[in-house]
Image (cartoon, rainbow, N blue to C red):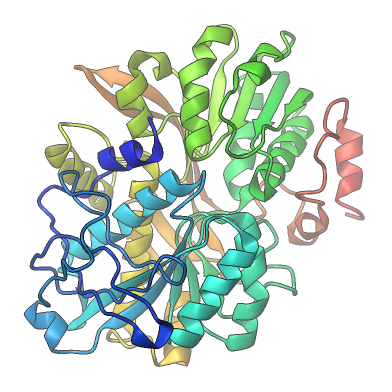
Length: 482
């Protein structure tokens, strides 16, 4: 299945139709971007050509991926009254991370649609920019959103390298950023080169997300692990987080495998996996997760070598619908599960199932939906006026809200404190679902480490290829003085 096909099944609620107003930007020499079908949504979206700022709302499955440029929608009454709240959204809408990004686009828009795309009487206007998952492109698009589009808030962000690239610029221009997509860059909010009061994260850190799988694996009695992560900034930090804690808990890494991001064939990697391992820990995002899932059963008996899908991209709901029973029984760990027992999540999962033939939501749709709730809660605290920068920053920093992901709040570094869930893929009555096996409640970015200072000294992202043969005393030395 190619990216376009994947996107066609990651559609918004069928009951929701999106309204988009397309503006020609003569100053940039641009033409109107593709628009969605006309509808009653309160928002409008300014657009630039794809080479500049890409503006789009996810389209219903029946709509084409590209609509005629002239298909501009009529603004709703709310859009023609109060000035819109303009929010820049940085996502890799093209490239190997694009399926993840488009799911996040869907989730964010689905929540806005559920509140009529309006906060405190103002329509919400999302302006999407395609980072392509590349640091230089991401920085350029951030500058365009801030300097040309004059947005008072940036959201989105998926790739760790892109986050590291834009953070110094954000500190310089002093524009609030709420990270709502992924971007687990470990030192983003603690390293003085990147951290600032203007940068807040509502997704996860690589340690927060990928240390619990190591702890859980050790508690199951696993002693020998293979770590396989995509070979880019986040993948290597994730490998370091899992490997170090697994060793600290008494395990050993017997093999490291790091396929390039965007790999098309996992057969050569699967064929070379060590037979000496008793667990395989994976992080393969975007199209990589799907391609692995299509091939792994030819090489691996999941009964003999359990698989832990860290972050959940392999066991994502869309992959479940394609690959079915081959994924049943796999373990995943992430900050959301369809089985979370709170009212916001139950309502979200029910609504999704009603419009998607009983399916559970894709993981990144769900997390983006929950993070949109956080953004709206902050906007509501300032009566829909993010232009009041200092008050808006105070509202962001004071976040403490129950979402579809669970309770979300921030630590003193403006980084997320949240629950992490270990869940298993199950099938009941012909439908796939999640069964929560363990919950790590309200953990922060330093969880599992000796302390904040030691965690900040740990060389996340610098240990590629060094974990095989490492011992607990070796890991202890990496923290420096305790």
